Structure formats: C-alpha cells, structure tokens
Amino acid sequence: MTDYRRLRVALLGAGAVGSQVADLLRTHADELSDRAGAALDLVGIAVRNPDAPRETDLPRELFTTDSEQLIVGADIVIELMGGIEPARTDILLALSSGADVVTANKALLATHGPEIFDAADQVGASVYYEAAAAGAIPIIRPLRDSLAGDRVQRIMGIVNGTTNYILDRMDAEGSEFADVLADAQRLGYAEADPTADVEGYDAAQKATILASLAFHTAVPLEAVHREGITGIDRQTIDAARHAGYVIKLLAVCERITDAEAHSPTGEAISVRVYPALIPREHPLASVHGANNAVFVQAEAAGNLMFYGAGAGGVQTASAVLGDVVSAARRHIAGGVGVGESTRANLPVVPIGRVTTRYQITLEVSDQPGVLATVAGILSEGRVSIATVEQTIEPAAEQSLVPAEQGIAGIARLVIGTHTAREQDLSDTVDRLAASGVVDRVVSVLRVEGN
Ligand code: NAP
Image 1 (cartoon, helix red, strand yellow):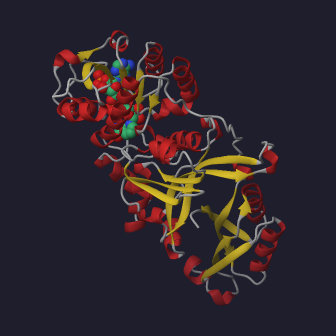
Image 2 (cartoon, rainbow, N blue to C red):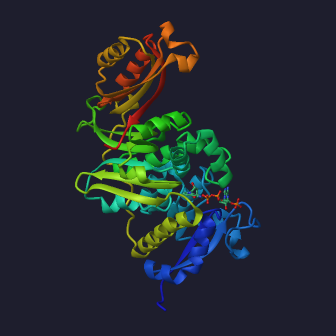
Image 3 (cartoon, rainbow, N blue to C red):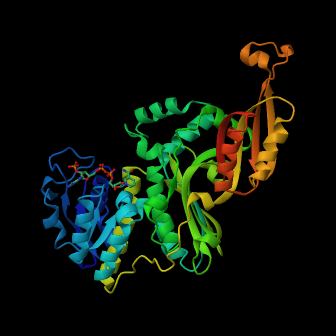
C-alpha cells in the first residue's frame, strides 16, 4: 500500500447526506486515497445529538457536539448541517484555521456566498460546493473548469425535484396540484411544509449559485425573480399539452444585452425562476419524476445537458466526495486556491426588462369584434401575435340558457406571442383584463426553449 500523507477530515452533520459521506469515506478509504493522493482520516463528526440513530453504522466515538474543537486542526472540513448558522461561523472558522471547505449548503451560499469566498481568498483556501446546485449532477465543475474557455449564454435548469415530480404527474395523469402534492408528501418527495419547493425558493437559491459562477458576477438572491407552481392547475397543464408544450419549473440564467443597464459592454444578466412552457421535443421536456437537469448553451460548445438525481442522501454524497478528493489534491499540492471570479460584475436586470415569448389564455364572450379588440390592445401594447387558437363553448352548455335566446357563449382564446418585453406584456394583460371584452385572464405563461 502506498504510504500517503494523512489528511484530517472533519465532518459537520450526519443526516441524510452526512451519514452517507461518513460511510463512504470509511468503506472506500483505499480508493479515495489513491484518487486523492492522500489518506483521508475522518477524525470526527459534529452533530446536535450524538446518540440519535443514524442511517449508516458509524462508531459512536467519532461523534461530538463540539464542532469548534473538531474544526481547528482539520485539513478539510465538510459542512453538511444546512441552514445559515452555525454553518456560516463554522465555515469561516475552518477557512481561517487553514482548512479547505466542502459544503452542499445552497441556502448559505445563496445568501452569504461572497463573504465565504472572500474569506477563502484571504487565506488562499478553496470552497467546493458541487452538491449545492443540483445534488449528484456534476454542474459546478463543468461551469467552472470544463467551460472555462467558453462563454455561457444561457442556463435553463430543472433544479427542484419536488416540483418536477408534481408537474410531471399532473401532466401524465391529468391530476390536480393539491392531490399530487399530498401524494408527494406521503411518499417523501415533498416536505410537510412544501413552501421552499413549490414557491420556487429552493430553485432561486440554486439559480443564484449557477448564475454567479457562469457569469463571473455576484448575484444577490434578492435579484432573482421567483414564481412558484401553486397557480398551475389541471386545465393549464391540459392546454399546454394540447399546444405541444409541457410545463416545468425552470431556473433561467441568461446573458442579455440591455441598454438601460449602463454596463460598459451593454451586457447584463437575467436570473429568474418560474413555471414555463417548453416544447415537448426539447430535451428538458423528457426530464421525468424527481430528476433534475441543467441545459447549458455556450457560445462555442453549443447545447449541453446534464441530467440525474438532484437530491437523495447517497446520490448527493457522491458529489460531496468528489469535492473532498479535489480538496485533498489541492491541499497536498499546496499553493493558493482558485477563488470565485466576480470580475465581470454584470448588472442583474429586473424581470420587467426581460424579453421572452408568452402564451396568454383568455376567456372572452363569443361576440363579433372581440378578437379584433383583443388584437388591437395587444398591438397597442407592443405585443405581437404569433398564433391564436379559439375554442367556443355554447352558452346553453355553460349556463343552461338556450343559445337561441341570443346570449353568446364563452370563447377561450389561446394567444402565442412573438418575443415581447415583460413590462409591456404585463401592462397589456392588465389592459385586456380591464377592457370589458375579457371575462377572465386564465393564465399567462412564458415560453422557453426554442
Ligand atoms: P439533515 O438530514 O437535516 O441533517 C443535518 C445534520 O446536521 C444532522 O446530523 C444534524 O445533527 C446536524 N446539525 C444540524 N444543526 C446542527 C448544529 N447546530 N450543530 C451540530 N450539528 C447540527 O440534512 P441533509 O438532508 O443531510 O442536508 C445537509 C446539507 O446538504 C444541506 O445544506 C442541504 O441543503 C444539502 N443537500 C441535501 C440534499 C438531500 O438530498 N438531502 C441534496 C442536496 C443538498 P443531528 O443528527 O444530531 O440532528
């Protein structure tokens, strides 16, 4: 056996991910040493309750509640507690003590990333976070290393497994949101409080991390436009399917040109999370169940898609261990770690200045001239129509009033637009709603992916 230098590895947290990391560090020790060029000694595991039952069989003597004592003297600190504190303080302590840090903590990086990366820069250490953006899927390394010589134009990610599971089942079964959510909670795909997932907060944190890395810009979480999926009902899903689309909760990170941003190059970025229509033939449309995928469009490389498990204890542990090996190699090689670049520092534009295509679904009275009025309002609002589909339900069926009495039925108009500016679109939708010819704005969805 090679006589490797020994590195002291401290683990903070032994929950779903941490317990698997600890287990793999021990059971794959020889292979990991060969990969890392160093023996990785798990010297301790900080938890809240050392006597709590664990998913994997780990020696009781490894556990401690004294994270500080564990961190000081470690070469690599793996933070898998989650949340902001004490994770932030522990990571800062680890960096100032000369350790490299591995973390999967998206909530912390999305809110305190710059502070943590600055602290690492100051001491020449590195922070690795492959598991923070899409679980097991390698996306941080591709963005940071593999595509380092390219320019990323756009990222579209399905980065939240819970919402993909819900939308996929609604699409496949024609079920209602509330029924599928309840089922997802029963099966463990959704938390008892599903807000972070279904309202898009989790996806927004991941979008912040991906956009910051892809565009060399510190993207504040507050600059990410966020909408969830709670307003998506069975009818909307059915209409999307009928029109050749599938609805996915997307994290879109995009490099755009924006004169109002006043950046030296005219470049800016948009980072947004919302349910969007994707053509059914797009690669992201085939992401089923709780899986994740990140679709990257780069100037030279073209389109790339990274697909797999976005969560799960052992799956996420795989990404964490890859980072541990990288951290060990760097620690052995010495020198200064490569920090997070924010050299471009591009402005993040508000959603109102973003342009995309839309599908607007309206309920209108089926009367002569209505379509012309709607078209006129859209045109005045600088929203150009690409397609219109109209379905008419006779009043007799809807309200039991005989149609021959001259009372019009209700028509459903599904309008596909050319690219329009979000602010123009939302002002126009407000005018449509107030026009007197529109009974109800059923949905307004962005179209992405073509
Ligand atoms: P988890 O199951 O809730 O486990 C958290 C662990 O941290 C527990 O062992 C807990 O100790 C310990 N801990 C919490 N607060 C602590 C404190 N104040 N002091 C000491 N120990 C503390 O969490 P997880 O699902 O493994 O997630 C860990 C991290 O990975 C999070 O940042 C999460 O966002 C990220 N992540 C998770 C997944 C996933 O599929 N689970 C996927 C991607 C990323 P006790 O056991 O004693 O309570």
